[in-house]
Amino acid sequence: ARPPFILYPAATWPHKNHVRLVKALHRARARGARDLQLVLTGNAFHAEPEIERACAELDGRDAVLRLGPIAADDLPALYRSAMFMVFPSLYEGFGIPLLEAMHCRCPILASRFGSIPEVAGDAAEYVDALDVEALADPGRLIVRRRDTPVDLGRVVGQFQGRSGATQLRRPHGVRPGERARGAARRPGRGRREGSGCVVPAALDGARRSCRGGCGESVR
Image (cartoon, rainbow, N blue to C red; front, side, top):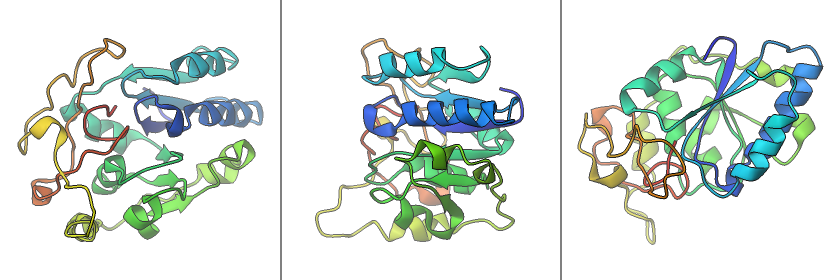
């Protein structure tokens, strides 16, 4: 990856909304952001054919960089080098990448679907993720980096102990400081690999599998 780049860490499920994001990148580059690059991490799933078609329409072979699953030790560097993390998902039960970005003080541009606004709060800027034009708005490319850390313990705590809430857990039962099994495997091998979270040890009580996000099929 080379600056300036936008990071989207998500497995390629349809509800992760990669296709609209790639189309938005195409429009942004056509309007002057010629050097802007989108970095995608994550396992390959059902939306792959559509994403590949959208990428093929881009001007510039390096416009989208596909890194596949990323080792937990390498994630912080990506977050800290990115202009911002974009998170245009159309459904999230929680959204571990939001915590990862906040911990690394990476700016966030996100949708308002599911639990995203509740998790990210005022740490994120929000966009209509169903609107390609809104995603491509040059003004959205300026997202301020946070100068103060976010209380991640508070964020996770508000989701624990709720009636009917899914128990929070680490991917594949990974202990603090461990890399999730299969994190460095290539996507599309038929097995769901985890990624390991880069949230600090203070969040050891956070144990959630985010369907299509963190957990068994992240990045």
